[in-house]
Amino acid sequence: MPPWRPLPLRGSQVVLAVVTFVSMAYSGGMNWDVAPHLLDESARYGFLPSDLRDFLLRCRAGLPFAGWLFAILGAHEMGHYIACRRYRIMATWPYFLPLPVFAFGTIGAVIRIRAPIPDRRALFDVALAGPVAGFVVAMAARVAGVWTAETVPAGIEGGGALFVPPLAAGWIADFLRPGETLAINGTLAAAWGGFLITALNLFPAGQLDGGHIAYAVSRRTHRLFSRAAIVLAAGSVVYALSLWQPPMYLLWLGILLWMRDKHPPVWTESVPLGRARTWLAVAALLLFVACFTLLPVRLFD
Image 1 (cartoon, rainbow, N blue to C red):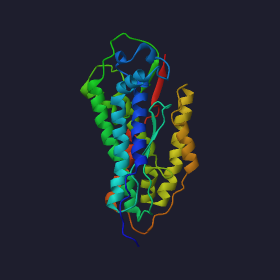
Image 2 (cartoon, one colour):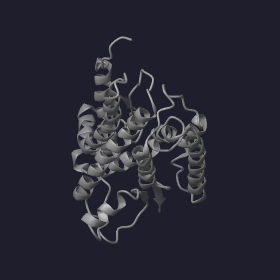
Image 3 (cartoon, helix red, strand yellow):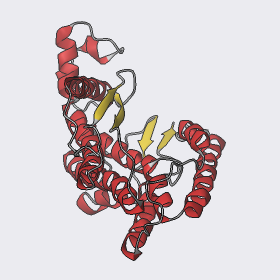
Image 4 (cartoon, rainbow, N blue to C red):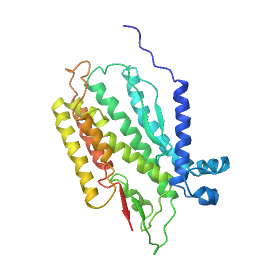
């Protein structure tokens, strides 16, 4: 067998990272702007900027959002990457994926693992490292966003959307800014997106991070939890539609139905997970519950 060596960082990955950051900054300035005085009146309406100056102003307004969301995605993927390095599993550096027409300016980031996973312990550690790293940065973003958020004056009413924080983060505003109603800003939006990403990845199904963790426990656990995850996603979609709210998990339900309980075997199936990692698997399930929100977005009149 040839000696193991890490894969190099490619120029295409750097270009994708830069394009994704600019896309997130532009989307942040458009959707999560908290400094409208930075934008020309013509730039505050419509998706396309009127000129280069308007484009740069929108990107400037979205820098807090882009910086935090890029850090959350980067931490998540680097968690996977570092765990792969520990087990000498050949994996690429992160590929960031831009999507300018999307509210977040990206559809996420991925690494490509180009070698078999040696055993259940390695699979578990690689899977868990990403969500934990991303969650830690998302919590930091939540704290920073609460500190910098503007207070909504009492008596202001109107239609809009409420971006519901998960159980893991909802208490932070009550602790740091008790009794205040806070307006969402770019940093809070990035944190909200980070928690949503963590929850989506920890669904214990298929080849998601949560599915890898469930498979590392046992094949039977993976099969049962994959079916439960589909029921949970379907229930959340039905619940949202019954309240005339956006079904945020509809696309994810389709992905879960496509993956179901399919999972490739590890190189050596006989290596036991161990008691400590089994308890960490329970903690990962609790982290999923803490980051999951039945209705992440609620519309109101």
